[in-house]
Amino acid sequence: MKREKAKSEYDRAFNEVLSRVQQSLKDSPPGAIPIRMYIAGGAALHLLTGARVTEDIDASFSQRVLFNEDIEVSYRDPDGRARLMYLDRNYNDTLGLLHENAYDDSTPVNVPGIDGTLMDVRVLSPVDLAVTKLARFTDQDREDIQLLARKALVDSAAVRRRAEEALAGYVGNVAPVRTSIDIACRLIDAERSNGSRKTKNDA
Image (cartoon, rainbow, N blue to C red; front, top):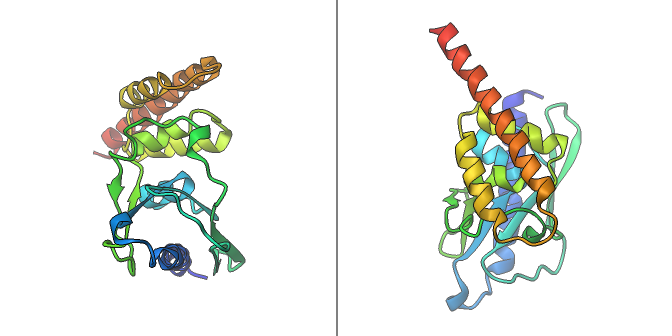
């Protein structure tokens, strides 16, 4: 399968998942709409960079939403293998690091087939997405932060400032997260430095 077709398959599945979410919201009372859907995780990274597809869609909503069934769509990956994309109903944004203004500072996303008067789809800003990666800070989280830096979407000063502001609202042992912030900022600086050198060499 050609990569362009594979990407279109992924996008089709993503759009279909959101369309089914919208369908489940169609009977919402007028005063509750539009309901905002905030995309995070790997799906947000893909929307921001065009890279790294993911099978689950992490999302929060501006209203409490009940889904009577799982929302999932089948598609083919670049190797032609069958994949399943689904809305992660277990996603909980209170268990990670998130700035209190992250949703206010999110960006609207135009998704074909989605009625903006019913559902307002938004994606976290690159900096806020990077901040969400700092609590668990797995190898994949580090790679995602590096990708954002490589694409010149974040810088270490902005990530550190946003993360420190977010951390002020959390309780518990925050020392490991502070260490993650330091490491992430070094990774970002390294990626930005490499990018600058490459630009100069290409000039």
